[in-house]
Length: 118
Image 1 (tube, rainbow, N blue to C red):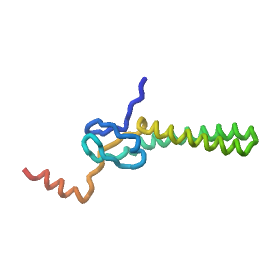
Image 2 (spheres, rainbow, N blue to C red):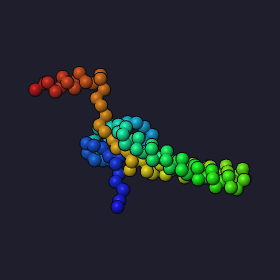
Image 3 (cartoon, helix red, strand yellow):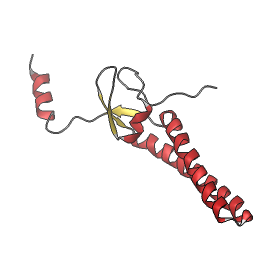
Image 4 (cartoon, rainbow, N blue to C red):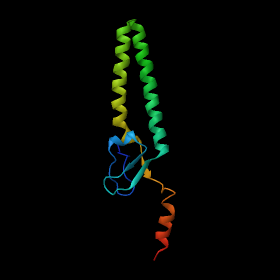
């Protein structure tokens, strides 16, 4: 079973790059549509990320506590963080969907006027 890239433009299906994790909104490279991350799917991603972070953190803490070595403790915590952050960036497009961005209120009267014009 292949993973499905969910971070795509709803208008044209173009993939949103992984750099989209850094902002709430994006612009599609294929059709220039304004996009925003779907809050529901973001919650799923954040919940998965939190569960993995807590489970990994507790496991790391348990293993390190058995060693009684400060340098090992610091090293394991840093190694865990260095593995967790790239893993979350890799998993992000598989767990987040995009919706069309809402029309700004300042643009709404102009858009309504254009729709009335024959």
